[in-house]
Length: 71
Image 1 (tube, rainbow, N blue to C red):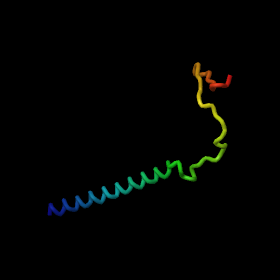
Image 2: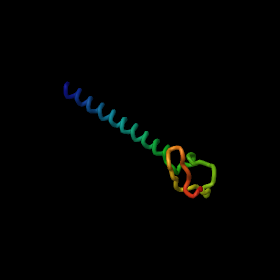
Image 3: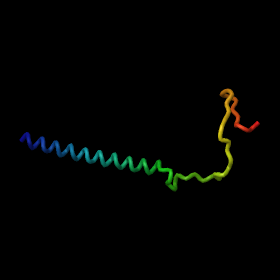
Image 4: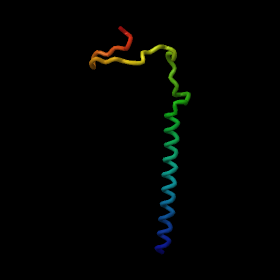
């Protein structure tokens, strides 16, 4: 009788572990799909990429920041 209860407990533990692993794998797959930068729905439409932006910033203090070459 005790062996049967132990066997049922082991089977129940295996089923719970399999369901938990499947749920974890599903959430990781969905998170990867959500954070994938190649996804079409996540593309931002807006200004063209060839617009020039200054690459560096000089900061003399926290309230006075200017771009290099803007003098």
